[in-house]
Image 1 (cartoon, rainbow over the protein chains, first blue to last red):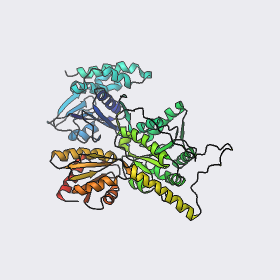
Image 2 (cartoon, rainbow over the protein chains, first blue to last red):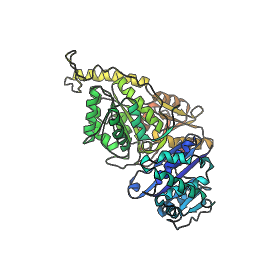
Image 3 (tube, rainbow over the protein chains, first blue to last red):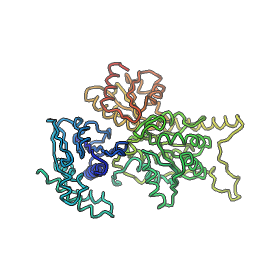
Image 4 (cartoon, each protein chain N blue to C red):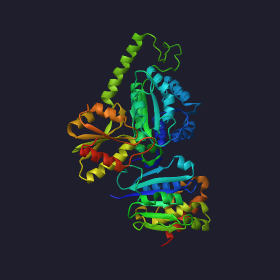
Length: 179
Length: 353
């Protein structure tokens, strides 16, 4: 039995919910059991957003994550809020363009990815979220990179077809970063 | 098999309602159920249906009353404060003995409360809400798949017994996405000889009404109605049992609380505690028999609720207070963690209630 609990957090507009949806769809394509739960409360209206994604090879119990195995953060308040909740041995992905602070915990693996900068350099300034997702995929063989294009295709509406290529580009940049 | 797709719980209700033959939706927006209305607004015009955002909750439930009186499959949806506004209409629908399908995606209360998930409308849904002697069938989904399957079931039961079926969900199940499959189910059709469809001079005209000024007549109507309710209680209770075969303790929880409770049951089993879960799927009729039987073999119960403890009263009634019933509860939009539920189970084992 393997279950991965992923918490993604940041500001509204950074594509937090989209990044989570992407992982949920990818899990679906890999025939995993998945749940995706967005924040929909006042914190979202006040600017911060987060979402809980659970990927498992057995049915998902509670969709609410209290101890994430993987934390992806795109702003400092989210890092500060959730850093201590990560399970020992877990992973933290930090957009190091936006967050200068370092994680002091030594019982977790931390990946500092200058996602916002990498996305900007690729001409896709709004897709730092997908750089981080690409980097995460590198470390999660249960969500193989194969078939990523199908997931992107099914998520991007036809009117925004140009975004498919950009998403693929930044996913690949994220995947290659730090290798 | 049909394809697995990802859907929000709210969208699953809307899609299932359309598949169940619902072509009339009347509502008024409120978080956390607005996706139902949004889905209907997009789909209904394309399939010859009616989506109407009314001027208020009170207007929308009375539009449901009207469309149902005309024999249509019809629904409305709202969240806690909005359901309170619809309560008068729910009583009129019951008093007129016509079907309706209503969704409550609960949020924290009382009053305007908050917008986070809650189960604190249990009393309102199962014990009344509106005035007078009446019942509603209350269905409590615990997954996105059940949001769909219980919607189809709800429309069927409403027509079968000429009463309101309500989905009592919560903000979490409404907002979350999970894989779901829609099988091509056969939708049963029911004769509605009482419907107001125009008599064309061929039959006496029908009247749908809830006014009976002669007490003898009103009493007779209520007696007849409760005969029907008795059939519902005998035939329609639904529940799920989880790890109950050898259980010495029993957790009782519905909806999102049952999902958290399942995690706690697994954790308790890992610690060697023989505990299981009974999850009521219908809250009315309440699955009394299975709880009564469980009381014969377990040492104690633990109720898990997103309220100050409402279903716990029905658990005590169903088990004739034969065993202690502990309570793990959070309120106002908070959800208990699996650890809190586990602590409740461990307290029951220690005999602390």
